[in-house]
Amino acid sequence: MVRMGTMMEFKWDAREQRTVTELFSAGEEPDIQELLRGDWKNPFLIIDTSVRRLWDGRLQPAMLSASGVYVMEADEVLKNTFTLAQIWESMSSAGITRDIPVVVVGGGIVCDIGALAASTYLRGLKLMLVPTTLLCMVDACLGGKTGVNMAGAKNQVGTFAPADRIAILPSFLETLPEREFRSGMAEVIKTALIGDREIKELILDQGDVRDSGERLLKMVGKCLLVKGSIVEKDLREEGGRMVLNLGHTVGHALESASGFELSHGEAVGLGMIAEAGIAVAMGGNSDIPDEVRRLLKTVGLPIGLNGGIKKHEFESLLNRDKKTRRDGRVWALPFDWCDCRLVQLSREEEDRVLPGVLSLLKA
Ligand SMILES: NC(=O)c1ccc[n+]([C@@H]2O[C@H](COP(=O)([O-])OP(=O)(O)OC[C@H]3O[C@@H](n4cnc5c(N)ncnc54)[C@H](O)[C@@H]3O)[C@@H](O)[C@H]2O)c1
Image (cartoon, rainbow, N blue to C red):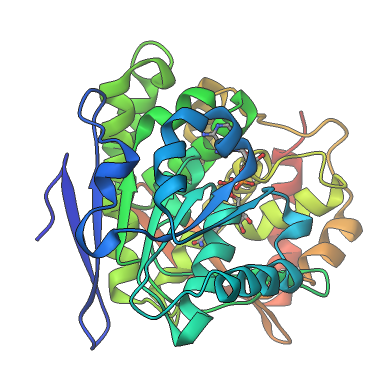
């Protein structure tokens, strides 16, 4: 059963493992200590350095009663097997046994590596995630993908291991830098396009969504319901879950082409415009690229690239995408609101549509 507002429950695979997701409204948020009762007492804590610094008073009691604490900087360069081994070592020094749970407090980087450590140490410990970025609240915390980067490739090593519990305390967003918040909004727009048009109305409603606690909470809840309904059916990304890659095929190429000057969210936003353009070329709703642009503009994300991007550079970056096969690529294309399709395009079809799509990205 799924209930909005307070608690949602998602079920995974034949073992009926569940993720209980609690979404708290302002004024109802528990102390971290209150979350750590019963099975969650004296956990091993993994915390983002910035969050630990900014929310010291809030986290201190939990840290004092923890069985062990590992504090890490949320840097993509540190999301690697070396840091993973350090977390394992720290768990070992703290004498962690199979009955001690792991609680991770941080954004997608710390949650991804913390969840991987939890799913592998002693062959798996109970896991609670407390996401502190918008991206992690609406996307990364749910669905069980854990991972670290290796040999220059993102999330090359990982597991599918859904958290047992997710506690979303939106007040953590008060300290989140604006650019990080906007990055999360790109995933919100993606989720709206894939599965819930009402999220669009919440974004376009008057005033900044960040300033309205109730609207923000509703938006986060709706995103989780969309993502949950997709990943519940395809935890291991063998099919339907791939629609969540919307915006990311072009987005990853643009992120690399900019030398990572574009943030992930900025690149995914532009990727959605481009991929909506490909959908139009394949017969999709021709209003979608402009509607995506309007949403991106509303939340302060870029809608074009200064100078654009050259076709040959773009193609060589696309060819590095993990989804590339000899006979073409599978694209997640938004044919309309709530009608995102997985479409295999041959090389010839890509050659036909890409030039038009690239012109959509010019600022
Ligand atoms: N597992 C999944 O399904 C999934 C999905 C999407 C993305 N990801 C991963 O998520 C990562 C990106 O995560 P992210 O966007 O959450 O960013 P992040 O974890 O890199 O955090 C961004 C920045 O915000 C800081 N921060 C975090 N919470 C804060 C707070 N409350 N106040 C102030 N600063 C705060 C961090 O220290 C960091 O500097 C990538 O590594 C990506 O691969 C995973």
